[in-house]
Length: 293
Image (tube, rainbow, N blue to C red):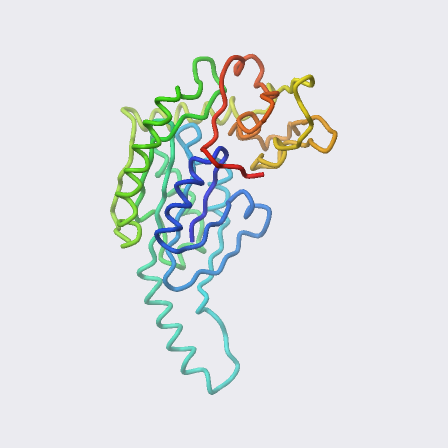
């Protein structure tokens, strides 16, 4: 089972490719968070987390999901029929044996380096005793892909030029093909990561500042002359922070749920959304063919 979080499609593309190689299910973390985060896992399924980097850390919804995730093996059940107790015991022992071989991995996308992102995800896993029951106390392996940049919330930070986008996507596709056999074969101890020169400083200091001061929907504005009230911005928001569409202009809730993923900005077909003056003159990006609406 592959749990993924994606705003502009980079991670969705990578997770889909892994699903094809492993023949396992794709689950949207954004959708799962609206439920109880309970899932049944077959004895042979892997557990994968695919997500982008936000401020050199996993996005807040991803960490919250991992901390509350409840996974139950499909062989775990109780039978009252005396004639089936022997079978139940055998299947329980098999499930316990499979649990020892459970494989948990992360596939991380980023515009550049990832800092200590895996360490932050390990903390979320360590905080979930329900995962410990499956023998998962931390990631067994982790992989990262450098993908086209999507963060446009600060001066000087914008999307990549078309040539750079093509170069990153080509290299990411090549790397992913190298990673797939390792995931399929459940290779543990793999750390194929693009770190930074100062991963601790980036994730702990700069990441802390990012979450404290830059996770805000305050600067978002809509140009009413361009907006056609289509509602796409509301549909693509992974935290349901935007209200709009159906003859209504978009409004941001200002309730602290915005993670500045810029899905609303990048998917607007009219280029009617800006983040104050910080996005003026900047372009939009979404992985080709990615339409989560």
